[in-house]
Length: 243
Image 1 (cartoon, rainbow, N blue to C red):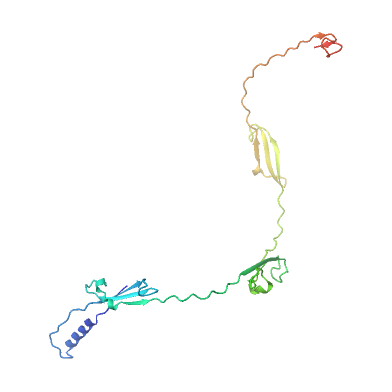
Image 2: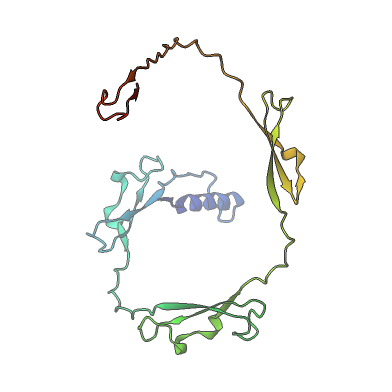
């Protein structure tokens, strides 16, 4: 941060010229004006070292703008005029505070009339809270903060709705026609026994498949019969027979 100071010598020279011009002091008609003085510059920067300020602070430097560039260059600084504004040192840590108390919350469902005029229509939920002063993890009656108690009421039962519509499905064979080229089944949805025509669908039979190839001709079966006498065929037909 850089600050430019005001040159008082320039103001004094200007005042003297004005006075002489008015003849107040009987000045000579010949006036000699001196050269303008050099501007004084001030630079303020953060000082993070602990050599001059234990907790850091600001370093203030100043000097004349010898090269008139408006910048306080290093060689223009007057070391003897450098000052430091130090931050205060952090104080000692305070004592440990007392541990806070836990907040406990209880909720309970109640019927109409159980909590006075609260939720008379349909009952609801009672919410109680308070600090666990004895640290037992249970919200005791004496720990409850009454003004924080809340009630959330159940909604009242709605009016009885109209009876629902009875729905059923009816299936009827569908002959060959515009709805099914090979016949099929007509499926109707009935409401209270009345068909909903816009919901009627058809499940149609598929087209007849192509004729299969001719099968191989089968062999003819021949039968031969022979008469035999009793005992000729072992235990078969003890009185004889035919085979």
